[in-house]
Image (cartoon, rainbow, N blue to C red; front, side, top):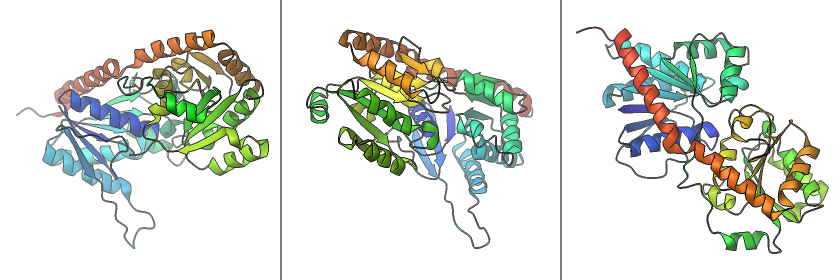
Length: 383
């Protein structure tokens, strides 16, 4: 099968999932063409079945803002025509699904028919889509898709709640590569950060307000009063300056490391004892899954799809958004007993194994085939 994948080439969950999906499909023999404005961050290895097509966004004096959606649609038309793609898989409703609809209509005028599968990841629905100025386009783009998936049951329900969707939305959860995300022997790294055998707590995100990184710091500040611990903050974003100021205000800077954006986050997770994700909204929580795959118990909020992944009391705990005291109590409960900690680690790994890439990718392959079969019956004229 020849598959075109359109995504944001960023460190965010949607870009990571789209890229890892493309890589996994290529390994299985499918020909995968990425179409985006820069090379995806995790498109980091060579495979004869992987291709990258850059969307060249130019600035013209006539436009105040570059017309990315139009350029993207044109690029999709070009790639579908000359690479003879069977299907387009776009990640995010806007602008990707709306651009794909335009490309599809242009191609149809030339007798070329290609179906579009749209995957909803979260902020395209929970933040952008709820803006009244975007809602009609989001609704149309989803309904005009030939197949629609969502990364969690929570996101599926929220989409139906907020938009007049007539399409069936299939839940296909995010996944993890257990060959990459597994606990490694990195004792030297743990010793360097925690020379006195302190517990290591980790958080990873894009440091947006919705991630509530301030809650991470406040939980850590309370935990370290009872248990010697260090905190590693992985990622970067608009809230970093505020978090640094909070660390100084609380006088805990010596026990916190800002690591910035890391490609090899699995090396950090390999020496972690606990992962914190207190997000206000989280459609799935890929970073949580990657931590669990590295045998790290997690404490999360109970927002969105997090409770579909983190089983309260088994793989960690899920508490109400903003419950710093509750998260602190559960963190201390996990970390205060090595026997209890090890039990949580084992259960976290067992849960992560349910989302292993080899179990999830066939769901997308089946989706593609179903969409192709139905599309060909309806759309392709008889010769």
